Length: 313
Image (cartoon, rainbow, N blue to C red; front, side):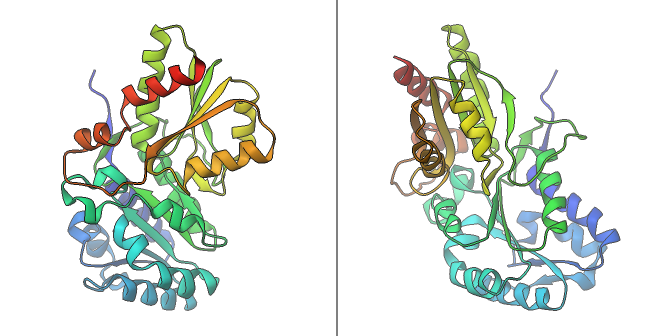
């Protein structure tokens, strides 16, 4: 039977369209990328609550902040490179420092930017956003976790950064699964090793790596982190007490992002389990298919398996 998938941009748009029917304060902003994000669906349903600001991402955040002061709940989206590097100061000051309620969506993170190439490939967004005080940083792993986290973002006052690919990803959770910002989910228990993975790409790569490792007698599990900030320290420490090794897996620079966060938790709590990081190693992006780039930057199943075998001797 074919694997069931759904576009993550569809999960995003379908959810905010449904929420907007009951919540009149939800508004959507785009920087001339609505054909990429598919928010034309929202514009058609609620034309007076949709704002295309043109190719002016920093201005988009200023407008979103202004709308928030009026009691609106603005969802502002752009490619992850623009939603992080280009508008960082405006998002930091106008939205976060001002204690407003802006929901920022960064699409096509890491290698999922594919043919848009190195200029559009945000490897550093997690590290940048993690330095913003009080900002929630979320990366759902499937369409149902995406919808659930968006519903919580809407209900929770404050700034959020949601990181999602646009293209189809497999379903991992049933529709009625419950999620909470700041809580990770165990997708698979392991006795020897745990992959602490963030985002659809690396969660699915980790699950496949577990199958390969099982064939060689290694019992590996997967912790779906879901929320980089606040991060589920208890879930990570719980796994550290059960397994011999933990490997963080992220579609981003290993410096400053998930790998750093997990390393800090393990070190600060005196954990003795072995630890390694899978992610981008101080490099810029390049042009290619997602499969090519996944292999090129060592995010592939083979790299996860090799690292696990090295850690476990």
